[in-house]
Each structure stands twice: as C-alpha cells, then as structure tokens.
Amino acid sequence: MKAAKSGSLISLIVMGGVGLLLFLFPGWSLELVVKILGIGLLIFGAVGLISAVMQKRFGASDIADLVGKIVALVVGLICLFRPGTVTGLFNLVLGVLVIWHSISNLLGALDIRKLDQKWQAPLLLSIIGIIAGILIITGVFGALVIRIAGLILIYNAVVGVWVEAKR
Image 1 (cartoon, rainbow, N blue to C red):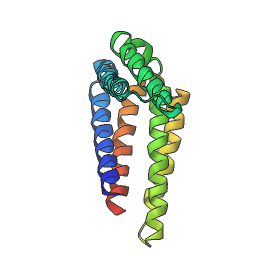
Image 2 (cartoon, rainbow, N blue to C red):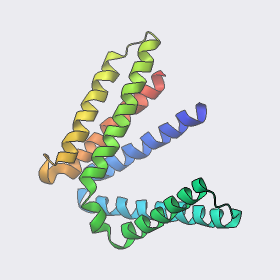
Image 3 (cartoon, rainbow, N blue to C red):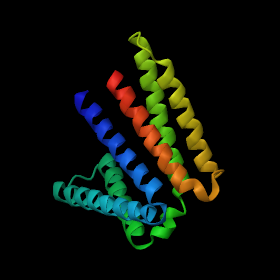
Image 4 (cartoon, helix red, strand yellow):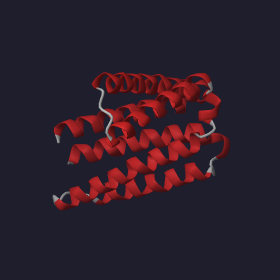
C-alpha cells in the first residue's frame, strides 16, 4: 500500500512538472515532453523485450506482454523521430490522462468520506478535473490548449497530492 502511494505521488509530481513546463514554455516543451516519453518507452520496451527473450517463456500472457513491449518500442521510435505525429494526438492523450487521474482523485475523495474527514472539496475538484479533461479532448480551448493543459496538469497534481495526503 505504501509503495503504491509513493508511486502515485511520484506520478503526481511528474505531472505537475510537465504541467509547469507546458505552461511556461508552450512552444518547445510539448515536443520535448514527447521525445522524453519516446526515450522512456524505448527503454521500457527494450528492457522488457530482452527480459522476455532471456526467460524463454512463451505462454499466452507472456506473448501478450511481449506484444506490449514491441508496441512500446514502436511508439517510442515514433515519439523520437516523428514527434509531430504524437503532438497531433496531444488533446486526446492529455484529456484521457486528466480524466484518469481525476477519477482516481474522486475515488480517493470517497475513501476520505469513509474516514469522516472533509471530503466535499476534493470531490468537487475531482469532478472539475473530469470536466476539464473532457474539454481538452473536444478541443474547445483552441490554440491555448497547451498552456491551459499545463495549468490543468498542475491543478490535477495539486489535488492528487492533497487527496493522497488525506488518505
């Protein structure tokens, strides 16, 4: 449980840092984030692929895992060498990420409610995060989407840290 909480906190801190970059430097930061993501996916895919080949296990779940590692490698290469392709999907990916974290925060707020602590504000903020994620996906923010997305990531990270601190 403690490892999951620290993993969640690390994820939230990274989310906040990425949000800050996107807000302060929208021109170059999006492509940088995509390239860093590409490097991470390449490492994840390569390590997983090498590990799978060395273990020589080829059951159904092992094959599915192997396919996932190959997909990670391919997506990582696309991120590195064709970042424009990925930035074109920015609204969708970011919106899904914000919705995912906001749902997690909402569930955390419901956990807080069980502890008889103040849970209404985290619940409301989580719902606002879900709505913001939907708005990002639909593209209603237009050209400001990168800066606004940065603010939303910062906001979502702060709410997530708050919820984790209350759990």
